[in-house]
Length: 390
Image (cartoon, rainbow, N blue to C red; front, side, top):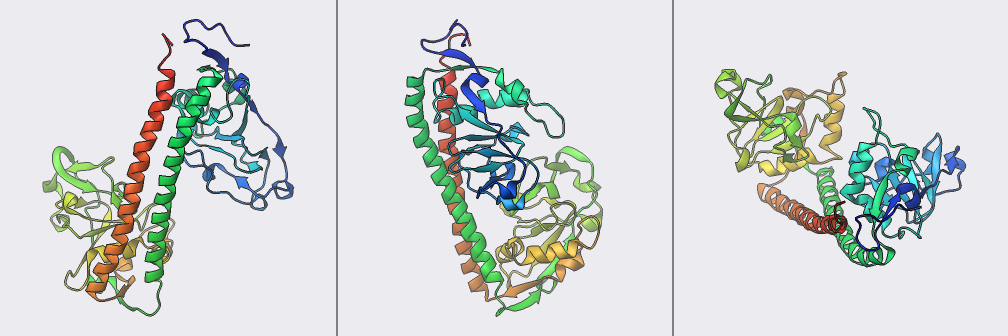
């Protein structure tokens, strides 16, 4: 039974989560004989998205799984900080590291529960009650007794109308972003996979050098040093960026990066990742990376950078080269020996322009998605801010 409505707005009540939803614990011991067509693992759930866009086959998984029905909420109870949940649009089985939740419509509308579970109010609580250090996980018994204030059904119904419109817009922008990225990768991979193009070793088109290596002392007003951790699929991140003392760098490695230079991660889990230097990063230093500088008269550096990002071509080559040691590792000779397709510089520029337009479309879709997402979050957060003293 709900507790007394002390200090609550009219119609609002406090409910335990177990009174709001049922934990469906129907176990499937042999997934391949479940009779289902869909398997949803935690890897198939996207953070902060209610749509399940990907899934696997029950025939490809083993061990006990959970059965879910269309309309159930699949919530990742492991690593709740990743904010993963989705609403099933089909019957299937899912990871036992998820909870299958079925709303109790006399307390919460089935359409409203997923939006509530996306709120910071719910997610922060979920993180708080998770146990374990490496893979913090939520226990249903603990989740079931958590108390939340909920608006009356009529107010839930009004909110759902607005939230569904906003969510539909978010998903549309997400679809556009995914489509533009897939088109970019498909176009780039198709071109670079052609066997009709003349090829030349990258090292013959310019130089491949080593970066600083061991980082020099950090200082407050130092020179930015871009390390492997700052390189992410064509982008340079400022997260954990080091500012170092240029004068403490060995003279042979004291090379400032120029616009158009390309950095390639040479070791570790992200070996082969690359990013091109633009005006913002000109004058920086390369860390434990390889630096590619090409002959600008023959090659557009942006074209070379796109080639190094192509998944089906150079990525497989770099993976093979770096796999020769226990720790993935590339050296300058490896990268200099990679073959790159050669076309006229005018065609290079035209290709780069086409791919840049797809990147801009992707960026614009993501920005609009983020804007509408903030609006949706504001609506959800504002719903619980109307309480008096709660």
